Image 1 (cartoon, helix red, strand yellow):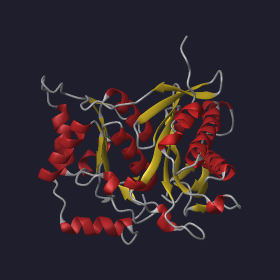
Image 2 (cartoon, one colour):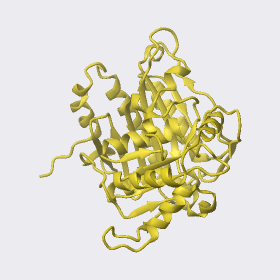
Image 3 (cartoon, helix red, strand yellow):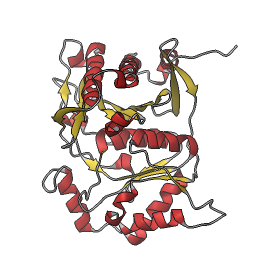
Image 4 (spheres, helix red, strand yellow):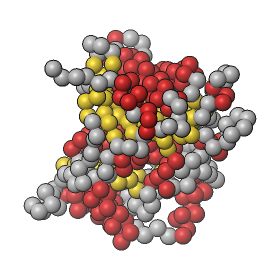
Length: 356
């Protein structure tokens, strides 16, 4: 008889990995799991109720919010407020970070950054979407937590994870000691350990990128795409192009099968388009813990300086050898110049450029 281990049981067993946490981190992860189950319920019946379509509002990115975007954001914030282990929530859907009020929460030790519903443009066509989250310990010791507590490098994360709402619903997370995946069993309403000690293959045959923007890509990326398409038996090329348009879904597939996800800079987005704090950093932490690699072509994602809540970044993430090949071609054909660094930094700070 197979023994089923639930997410809650697994978290409790691993609590000794964090003697300083005294149970707070475990409870925080539990709260995120509960909210994920609530969001999953609504995602699965979205076509049967008035929760599809646009909400009629825009987020800080200038993107039209979907009804499920707003719903998911509310559910995760509500769960974190109720749990009392989080003092600040930074969400893609809110212009500023949110202080969690309350006698317990004001002294909480943790910061949560979250993309409540990644790939939400796919909701109306029933394609897999997801949630991405990142957890930090606050740096300040007195008074309310501040923006400095939020703007920490990716190397400071104590936990990160994602939830994919697809043919089955999975929660995958790391606390810096490997990666484990849990599949939601709807018959008992629990996430159960299904993918212990996940590892991404060092090589793969899948590349994921929006090739419709090819003309705007750096030369190094163009060279890599041509490399992927050339026939070579020894390296199993040509590779297969697979692009869902949901970062969570694309990276999850590549995590299982091996592959690379690319979201490079373009002329209109010299810093890239994905958000560093609640998309690139958490996914990079997970992939690195699974044995993969994540970079902007020149610098490790987790080492990047964080200067803004909604700061953008390009990213190449996935199987180690595939990412190293992109880095090699970027350095050869698209070397980063001093002026490029200054321009990208200014865009990060909101001095130049617009939000597309």
